[in-house]
Length: 181
Ligand code: HEM
Image 1 (tube, rainbow, N blue to C red):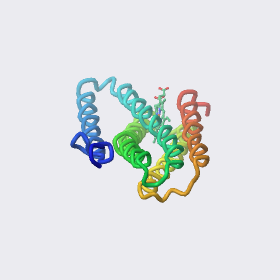
Image 2: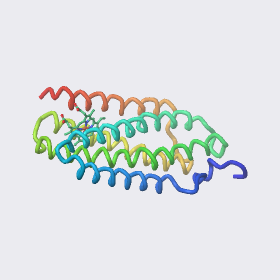
Image 3: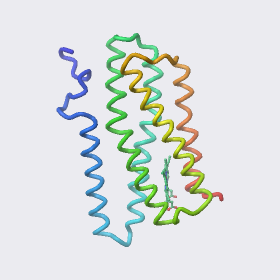
C-alpha cells in the first residue's frame, strides 16, 4: 500500500466508525441543547433533524449500489477493486449507518409525540421504512461480501437493486406529506 492512502481506510487518523460515533455524539448534544433552549418548538427542530438524516441516509442508499455496479466488473485484486472496497466501507460506516440511526430515533419520537403512533399513513410508512432497513441490511452484508471478493452477482443485479430504495423513498415521502389515509 505504499503511497496509496485510501487503501488503508485510516488516512486521517480515525476510522469511519469512530467518525460516525463522534457525529452521533454531536447530534445527541445538539438535540439536548435544542430541547433546553426551545422546548415549545422542539417538535419542528426534531422534524428538521429527521429530514436532514433522511437525506443523508437516502444519498448513501442510492450511491452504494451504484458503486457495486462498477465494482462487480472490476477484477478481484485489482487496484480499482481495492479502491471500491474503501469507498464502500467508508460510505456505509461514516454516512449510511449513523444516518439510519438518527432517522429512526427521531422518526419514532415524532410518531409518538405528534401522532401517538396512530394513523394508517403512519403504519404504512413504518412498514415501508422497515423494508428500506431490510435493503440497508442486504447492502451492508454485500459490502462485506465485496470486501472478501465473494460477490457473485452481475452488474445488472446491482442496477436493479439500485431502483428499490428510490421506489420506497417516493412512496414514503408521499405517505408522510399527503397522509392519504
Ligand atoms: C422509523 C422510521 C420513520 C418514522 C417512524 C417516521 C415518522 C415521521 C413522522 C411522525 C413525521 C412527522 C410528520 C408530521 O409532522 O406531519 C415525519 C416527517 C417526515 N419524514 Fe419520517 N419517519 C421515518 C423515516 C422516514 C424515511 C425513511 C423518510 C424518507 C425516505 C422520511 C421522510 C420524512 C419527511 C420528508 C418528513 C417531513 C414531512 C412534512 O413535514 O410534511 N421519514 N416522519
